[in-house]
Image 1 (cartoon, helix red, strand yellow):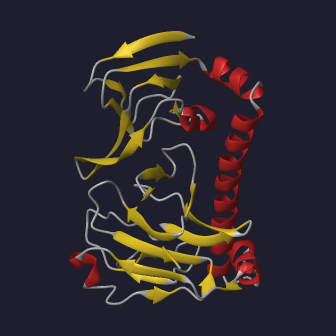
Image 2 (cartoon, rainbow, N blue to C red):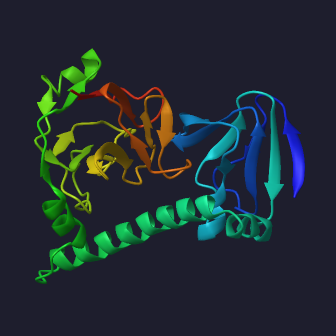
Length: 260
C-alpha cells in the first residue's frame, strides 16, 4: 500500500486505462467523469473513506470513468491483492461488494431471459415475476418534474400506486428492448443522459429507496451519487421531498420524489 497526494485538478486515472489498482480516499474529494460524445460529464463526487476504481479490478475490465481531484486529496493506493485482503478483513465492505456483484449477475440473467423471450421461447423473466409479487399498494409516493424543461414531458405529479416503478428513456430506431419495461418512458436526444433502464423507485425492508439500474451516467439522490462508478447502487428516500437527478450533475432530468 502506498499513500499519495494529488493536487486539485490532477487526474488519478482515466477512462479506458487498465484497472490495476484501487484507491481509498483518505482526505479530500474526487470528481468522477465519463466522456459522452467527446465531452466530459460530471457524474458525482466521492468523499473520504470510499474506494475508487474497485469494480474495474473486481471485473478485470478497463476503467469506465475518469477520477480527478476536486480538492487536494490524500489516497491510499492498493494493489488488487491488497484490496482483496482488506475486503476479507472487513465484513461490511465484503457485504457491500457482494451486493454489487449480485446486482450485476442479476442484470446479466435479465438480459439472457430477454433474449430468450425475443426468440419466441416460453420463459418468464425472474425480475419481472419478482416485480409483480413485490408490488404493493402505495398511495403516498409522488414523482414530479423539478424543472420547466422536464415539465414539458412530465406535466403533473404521478402518484406511484404500484412499486417498484422503473424510469427510462424511450427507444430510438434500431435499439433492442431493455431488460425491464419502463413504467415511465421519457424522450431524450443524443448525447443521451437517460438510459433505457435508468432507475427504479422501490420499497425495501419497509422503507423507500431509489436504485440505479447500471445506467451509463448514474443517478444522484439528495446530492449523493449512486451507480456503477460509486459506492452503492441504492439510496434511501427521506420523508417529504427528495431530489433525484438522472444522468450526471448538469442533467436536465431532475425529479422530485415526495413521500407524504
